Length: 159
Image 1 (spheres, helix red, strand yellow):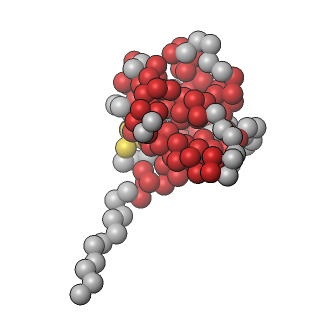
Image 2 (cartoon, rainbow, N blue to C red; image 1 turned 60 degrees about the vertical axis):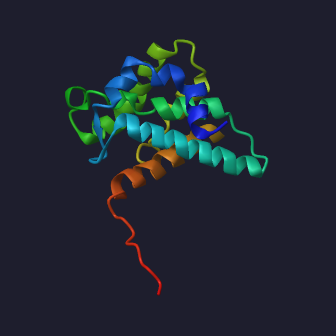
């Protein structure tokens, strides 16, 4: 399956949810929105999954994709919910788990644990599984691409 098919196969309930539709309207990292950022995190998760599988390191791809797509749903309505950026950093993982449980009531606890710790090391909840570590890393990679996307490498022709 290609990356788009993987996202739809494992993440269709999130992608089709009202919460994810609202995520398209929530600005995030100054240059993007929560939905776009979350899709980028999922794409990084897939890339890490594929790389690590070459070394026979087993990961649960469904856990990674669901956690990636839902990890920032708790940011929606941030101005009304959180009094500061620190409160958002601290509180949105818990709120994201609550939002995910509204979409998938019987979601695997490994997904919730990964989401709860994705702000490490900025907030000291240590990831406890491989999937949680990958989500944390993928989130940081996607954040960097969100923030620095406008720094294009100039095209140079070599004569």
